[in-house]
Length: 387
Image 1 (cartoon, rainbow, N blue to C red):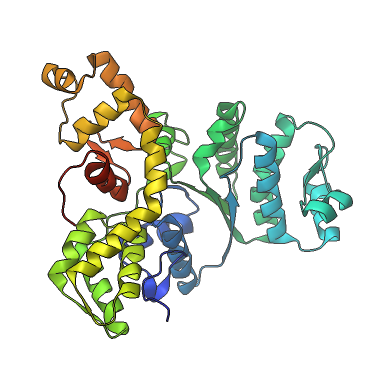
Image 2: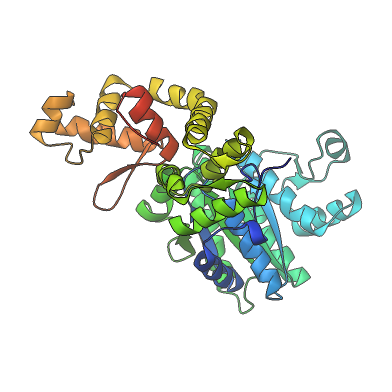
C-alpha cells in the first residue's frame, strides 16, 4: 500500500504544505517578468514551490511556457550554451526541419548549426562547427528573449543548480554578459516576454553570488523559502496516518519535527518509514526505529563529509555543536585547539565553503542539514540526545 508521505517527487495542489505567502510573492514577481533567485539548502522544497507557483499562475489564467535547464554536471561554457539553447529551441520546435529553421534564422552568423548526424546519435539540437566566441554566447543568451517575443508567449527558464556555473572558465565574464543582456532587453519599448528562475541547493554559494558579490543586483529578486509552521506539519502528519487507519499522539511528533527543522523531505521520509513499520497506533519504539533507519540511509554521506575535514575543522565543528559562537575568544581557541583567531576565520570559511555551516548576519552559526547536525552530535561527538 502506498504511504501518504511522499518524499521522492515534486508535490503540488493538496499535497503542497505551507508557504502560501511565498507562492503569492513569487507568482506576482514572475507575472511581472522579474527574474528570481530561489535559494535554500538541499531538499528545501524549491522544486515543489516553483511548480505550485506555476499551478497558481495557470489558475489565475496566466499563459506561459516553462523549461528547466539542469546544470548539475555543467563544468564548461560550451555545455551550458548548448543545453540552454537546446531547451529553448525544443520549446518552440519539434521536428528536425523546425530545429534547422530556428537555428538558421535566429543563430545565423554564429558557429551553432543543426547537424542531422549528431541529432540522430545524441539527440542534441545544437552542434558547433568551431569553438564558440563571445558573439555565439550572446546569441544563445539572447535567444529566449527573441523567440518568446516572436511567439508572443511568456517563457520562463529555470536554471537548476545555477551556482555550478562558477566552475566554468571565465564565469565572471559569462555572468557579466548575462547581466548586460538583461539590461538591454529591459531597455526595449516592448517588455521582455522572458525571465529566469535561478535555483541552487548550495546555500552559501548562492548567497555569495547574489548577496555578497551582488551579481544580477537590481536585475533579480532574491527569495528564501519561508519556514513551515510546526502546527501545520503536525496536522499534516496526523492526517496522513489517519488516511491509513493509524493513530499517533500529537505530542510525540514534536521531537521529530523539531529535530528536522521543518525539512519536509526528511519529515516525509521519516514518517513513511514509521508508516511502513506500524500497523495501528504509532508508539515511541516505532519512532526510534524509524529514525535509526533514516540515519542508516544517510550515514555514508555524513561519514564522507566529516572524513573530508581536517583536524582543525573538526575541532571548530565540535565547538559549534557545544553551543559556542565566539570562536575567536582566547578561551574557545585554547579549549578546542584552534591555534589563532586568523585560523578561526579560515576554518569558518572552509566549513561554509563545504556547505556544512551557514553564518547569519550576526555571525551566528547553524548547520545547513538538520539530520547531519543530529548525526554529528549523537554519533560522531557522542552527545546524549533524544529524538
